[in-house]
Length: 106
Length: 125
Image (cartoon, rainbow over all chains, first blue to last red; front, side, top):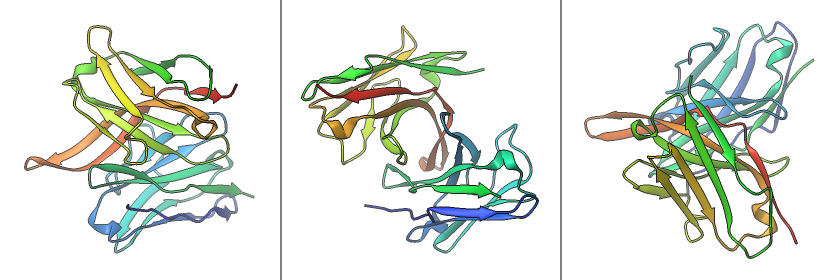
């Protein structure tokens, strides 16, 4: 079965750029999306089809996908961006989630 | 604005069937695919399956033998049934709307743009 691998945690200072990676075999040949989840809340879609932002998602969120790695980039990270982030892809008619990355803003 | 609301028992006895319903408001259930996703306490997200209004469904292979997802277009709701529940099925269960990107008769990706608030189901005696 297809697997997506994320680092368990990433730390960033306020105002700096945070990068969260998601690795999978030939992931660049598929579409990746990203969800943000804050404690006690449902996940929120922040990036879909590798690079697209849903309405209402700040411009500081961006995505890329090439080779075996998709990356979620948060520019000018703010304290409100502290959350868990999950990547997700579609493979062989199956939805696959990464294990999640806890982003700490300190 | 599309809204999804999960409902069902918060406590299920081991070996019994876990049953949940998701009610959709603000749009017709007939126009999209719909999915169930779960999250054990303190852990990550796990896709359970999805369904279309025709009743066509697709399930996570790891749960396929125990899962049934059904849809009732007259009530604008869809449901989850998970048989032979164990403590490992304890989780927050989310319902979500599926978006697909399709081209030339095939679909390249599925993702979830609207989610319910989630409901905690505990499997315990």
